[in-house]
Length: 347
Length: 277
Image: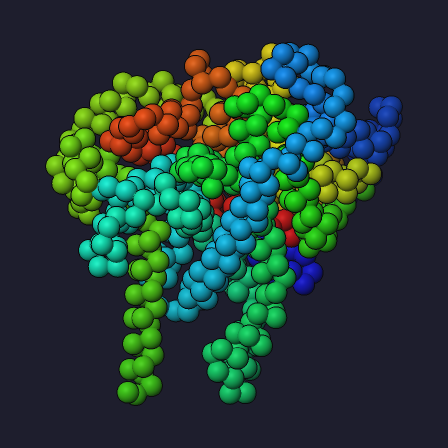
């Protein structure tokens, strides 16, 4: 599973591996009988090899069917929809009259679609910067030995486990105009004199959504980067220390180059997760005020499910899909180790 | 300062930093729990109380009346998603790890790419497709859609697990005359128990916490998961914060249980799926 040069235990499967280590003890002793059984099976008709091949295909069939049904079909259908002149009446029919590029022309001309695309870029960039800086700092912190590091590491994943809608409601509550904890804190400290209307002021609203998303994403960055840092050999760190490298030099010249592949994967996945964000925005602002927190996802939802223009929604979806798919080749490249065909039981 | 003193001071500084991070991470959760016990008057007083102010169970009474059906719905969806993920992913991952099939590279690539596809893209199409095959507003429809979070991840995690399983295990079973199916069912699955738990937990949390498919594929009237229930509360003109937060506290329960019961599986599993090395 570990990709060469990508940091094996990045994947963090060591516990699972440990789980199996006890298993195979009974196995090797029985191998001599193999030929006899194979002969017996061959006599039964279909050669064992071929039967195994068929079994492999049968095991894989549900997964292939699911991929075709739940991913391939919707993606293809989404492309079709984006070229159709849909209306609430056409939904029952599965197809609608051909519309040429009309839906894409609409997206380009629609000011809200355009700002949604811009907001998506701003939001994604801001989230990644924030999540990376905080996540990397925490990951570095957790590599040191001090009281409370285990507790810190195990509780840091809490935001990750909450349903996104709950995160949305919590932040909506904390950032309220009146009686919100954030305003209360800022006023108590004396940073502001009037409570800020975080969720209803155009610039602040996007910032609030951004803060919530950073809070949400930090655990993921911390855990991934932490497991990457675990793979930096102690000898390398010690050698750098002996050579008189200061902490900053050690970080920049030794640690970062070693875990660069992990950083790349983390940022890549962070990007993919962030362009998809939907629940949080819907719960916090619903895209408002005045569409200032409208992202591609939320505006696409609005076009399809509020205005029933599935064609226009699908066209905007395709913009999002292309944006997300920019990462696909790089992701496949970084995951090339997992493209291995099999560990070869079927001989 | 001596070196020892300095390193000791540094260590306490680290602890302090971790504490600060944990306060920021956990405060929102604390706020929901405390808020869920506050009275409506307290919540609308315009002042935020950092500590519990006047505890009451009213919110829970409201929520249990209004949302217990929705909690049950979410349980069904979560369990359904877990079952679907196991049924599709376990044999699939086994085939991709232990059989030399010509499609392996294609299928694994497809799974990696599938993780990138935004849910709104799938939701838009699936709504229209489901509308046509009458799966809109049904449990099977929602569960099939919720599988899109869990299944690619599950297959990749399980495949990595099966890679680590020695081939001798299967060979021994075959030598003993077991069929491929028997080997899978009696030998492979029991050995993969810990990985199956990870996958099931992850899939359950996905189904339980799903919002986007619930919002699009359900009509919001007959089948209402807790996430949709919370959203309806939030969308009301004047939010009943007490009820919202009690509902939020309910929605956090599975996560809390998982955190305590299956923490080691979750932490390893979540990172495993994101970085399919």
